Amino acid sequence: MGIAYFRTAGTLLTGTGSVTAIGEQAVLLKASKVALITDKIIRETGLLSKVMTPLAAVGLQADIIDDVVPEPPFENLEMLAAKLTGKGYDLLIGVGGGSALDVTKVLAVMLTNDEDVREFIGIEKVKKPGIPTILVPTTAGTGSEVTYNAIFTDTRDSVKKGIVSPYLLPTVAIVDAELTLTVPPTVTAATGMDALVHAVESYTAIRAGELTDGIALQAIKLISRSLRRAVYNGNDLKAREDMSMGSLLAGISLGNAGVGAVHALAYPLGGKFNVPHGVANSLLLPFVMKYNVVADLEKFAEVAKAMGENVSGLSLREAAERAVTALAQLSQDVGIPSNLKEVGVQATDLPALAEEASKVDRLLQNNPRWLTANEILKIYDEAYGEEGESVNSPMSEEVHA
Image (cartoon, rainbow, N blue to C red):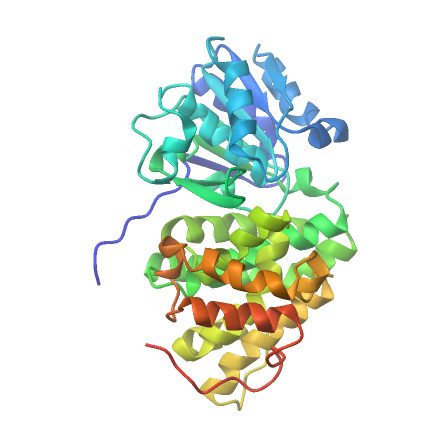
């Protein structure tokens, strides 16, 4: 076994009501001028009072910056950085879904580094730490509160690109399931399936290890047993708690083991067709997993068990394939689009999508089964819905080295 690194947020606060401790955490960080980064939808829900009240209790008044947009482009970052620069902020608090949290992480380093933000694209390109951050997710899905990467849309070539640096890890992450109770069913489904993608991909990734395996399996267990309930009965606090913890654990596993081909194939869908990240990942998950399953039958059989599937009496291969059909069924049950046509993709778009996805080497090299542009195109063809087999049909015997 080679050297393994394990990184996460500096401090983790979890549990129902944990957001009430945000004032104490800001005091520990010696904050004097705070900016709260969010979007207009979160502001309209009234959730910000759950953050502002405990801050006020310790004498801190945060300036609310609510200009984050969904699937943010780099221009959104640049506009927000211009608002913050030179104002003396010594703490950023991000409140919202993955977009708001990713924006907060990168804004913190933009305030201490002089380079253009596009120079941070890639791995380890940020030169200096940012100002302290506290991240408070209001969805159970992205795990951004514990990862050191952030994803943005580059409008210059309509491709999503990542910034990966340990300097993006937040100083404090607060995961409080009560903040997710107002999330509508469609968003609960997409973000919840996104978290499941993180758990499954990081568990089966090349870089997976003993530390991340147990974390990822627990995330799969929590999400699989509670996602349907969270979608169809949003007031079920126990289901929301399972989803929040599952998302957190999946984010920790993702942040250390990484993800693979699902994300690589999803990036062009987001960049070129504005498909929300969670929807793109969830739609492609069963098709990519069907391709991957033969590369690690043992691990996929464990995924099936963690999902609550009865694999007693099944062969190892049958148990592994049960994981793929269970993932497809769960995605269908919570209303995720079942094929690419439903999100606006045309058959003529597939070759260009495959070519773009084949360039995402950072993720493809972590996938348990090797893919070329041709294999990627075959997966897109199947996900398009007219060619290839159903994800519920027998698996191909072909294995690629």
